[in-house]
Image 1 (cartoon, rainbow, N blue to C red):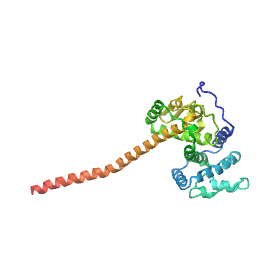
Image 2: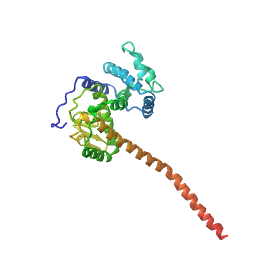
Image 3: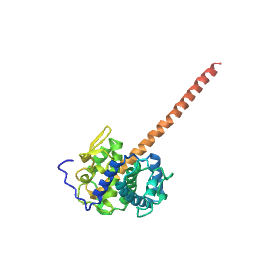
Amino acid sequence: MDDSLPRIIYADELFQNYVAMIKQIQKNIEQEPLPSDLVQAINKKKERDPRQILDFLTHLGMILSLLKKTSGKPDTSLVDYVDDWKNILTRPFPKILLPSPENSIKLCHLVSLHELLEELNADSIIDSLDDTFRVKLSSLTQRKVMDLLSKNPRLAELTLKAVKRFVHRCLSPLNVDISQKLINYLCEDSFWPAGMVSDCVLKHGDLVQDLQSIFPEDVTVQNVHPFFQLVDLKVEENKKKDQRMTMMVQSFPSQVKAQGTQSNRRRAAKVFSKT
């Protein structure tokens, strides 16, 4: 990390403990991304009842704390693990929170699952933030951020994920100094997908980006709400653009077929007109 960045002091040890726990689990149990069908199923659960997400997070946090101490096999289902340790867990795990089939989530998915739940819960937290966190960004900063994120849709998505995780972990409850620059926190690699950030530089395939260019110097924790909205807007714009492109690609064969049919009809008409 850049030596010019100040050392961050968190309000308590909650954040550091969480980071240590996740890294220990990743070391002990090989982790995999949560399958897309499970991601969709959990998103639908949130749409039906957003309160389930926070409940799920609470129970999953207890399970992760236990998993750090016990370890386990990556392909063991979460349901089986909970059943094996039900006498240790202080509260029974409500299986109704799980997507169907309930044994589809494995121990190798738990870090990815927790991160998804954090991001979903952040959507609720961000809406409830008071004016302390809604200080407007300057027009120049807005243009800089939007111009940068416009260059690479993946950069916008990754940035939004990182900001959501920051909101969940550090703003509920408040665990940071609100006067600090946002970059001072978002340089922490645990806010980003595993292995993508080192020394405040994001690397993902061909994408290499200095994080300090994403979070300008004048953006502080007090600007987190408008910054979140700005990045979220860019992500939504990119999604709509992709949808339009997909529709164009899908409609292209039928357009070609229609044009071919019209051309054949014109040729046939010419033949008949000569007879």
